Image 1: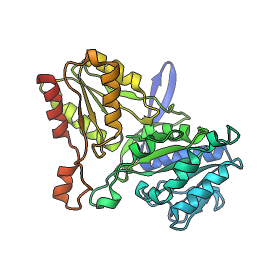
Image 2: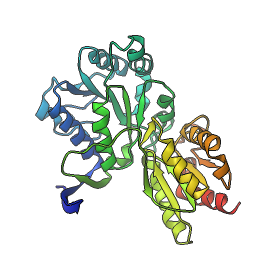
Image 3: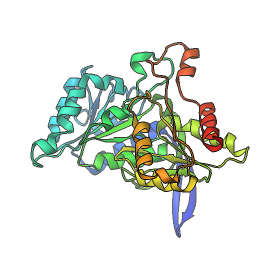
Image 4: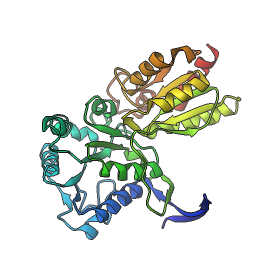
Length: 340
């Protein structure tokens, strides 16, 4: 059962409950489906099995098999069906068991969903959400441990959202479902059990707005998704040494909220970017370019970006720990930009 807390905000009583990330996802989808009958969910095991990660638990019972639809193992097929249905007034949510499987249907996402509005001269919109886990989830080996945020963010016409906690997940997913353009909504197998406070009532979080999760004055750390936890760990350790870190959670990768990052860097004069992705041509590369182009005179040290090793993800647990970014790397990077 969720834990219910109550507090006052601007003379309003707000009830908060503590729920899991998966429950936040399920609540967002269910609330939106109650609000709008044109919304439906489809994907592998989303109905009878309550979702591979139980993120659609109870939805089949409430909405029935016409709105919560189990599909064959055929991502290309059901992605195309969902995209086509947007052109007849529907607003589908497509769940991929992992975004590694979206590669089978990536032609539909890139060449159809992202381009319908432009190629129809604005006659059609494509209100669709593709959601599911991205990046690594432990020992799942190379073909199931890939981060796809920068892949999809490179495509005009797509919005890319990567929440890091239950509160953000619910608010952002509701906004994504209401958006009239295709949204790639990326989660993590390793976050579905994470718990956090979520308001009892209705709320949304606008897409394209980053958030300063921790105020600081010495260095800015930008991150998103589950890897941001390593930034929090590093900041806590560095605080013991008197080093104050400001942590920004992007939340939305595209559109990118560069103003929040610029404002922070102009205050701290140093930047470290932490991203669970291969180091070549990723989101942190883009952020590095933006800051150097628009805030170069404010920098007191070169920007450092921290990524995975430039190899496919290893299966060995020992090698995997070396491959994945961690808090120790963040600590070293912060000290380097401070004391260089």
